[in-house]
Length: 479
Image (cartoon, rainbow, N blue to C red; front, side):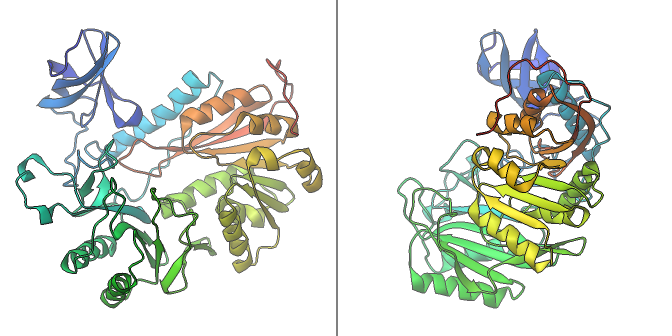
């Protein structure tokens, strides 16, 4: 039995588990810990426990460091919720991400799989993100040595402390996005403090400065998006004018007025202060327009690698009808269009579908069609009859995976190939298990989009079985 605060001496750290936590065992109790590395021998201090099953602990003392341990680059490591694995060398991170994919497919999916191809690592392990989202706070998180600071030093602009919706860690330097990201963020904060602009109080729901988003592209364009909690036009005008003067490399400057009690802005009007109101990414000569509300993969270089794998798995010859499910802004659909007869994209978010149509138009792509609506409602018998049964289905669902109704529809359609792109191998494994009656896994390719995090993308090629296995439960036809 463990006790909170108990010191566990000379614990050998065994492997990297889920959510970036390492796994060890103490008296047959599984212990999860952060900031440890497989191969470490450490003393751990228990923080949480559940009967005799498992516990969580923090590093109390490193006895023998692992050969895979490296010095974390970021001064905020261990406090900020991002980049939890930056103290582990990158090759070891990739090893455990590949293992995570294998374990999920075999243990959770309980399906037969071929040998998994070596994970595609990221060429950049820092400054690889094209988007960062920062939050203002009138009461930032203080370190123990900062407890005596004066009130005017409590204002922060940075990331939320994990598990604390009302606490923000003031960020000095973030190594995830290239310049001018850090310079812009620091200048916004300095200007706001100098001119007495109020920082947002999330509990009272008041304050002018609420959120800051910085987006950069591989075409060297920069978008800055500021979310204000009040419609104070003189203050807004002053700040935004200062930004344009100070950073001429900003190609698009937009803002929202958000007086709601949440930070979502998909339902808010976009105010364009400077530039066209969008930025552009480039991939194989294709231009993808990214608006303030548009989704685009946040690692541009690795997005290209991911899409190349997807296109390769699809094996298109130019004669195929392709359904692209959860198409977003149509990046995959437009990327594969030149190799297909027709690509039909479906997405829940109507604004994203409009972006997808624009991206087809500006690239002179005329063999795509896009539809907005809930996947399980749009993808029905009438839709299939109208647009012809697909030869290939590409599906790239959110982390929650596909709704069971959608999976039943895929089984009803019976396309020869399904290419399943996933950002969550656990839910992917669940879905593959439900498709296993009619489809076998032919190829598996993990891709690391987010170095120093526990996240991994995985692409699976499913091919229709020549002889169906016995279906355990009836497949319902789409409405």
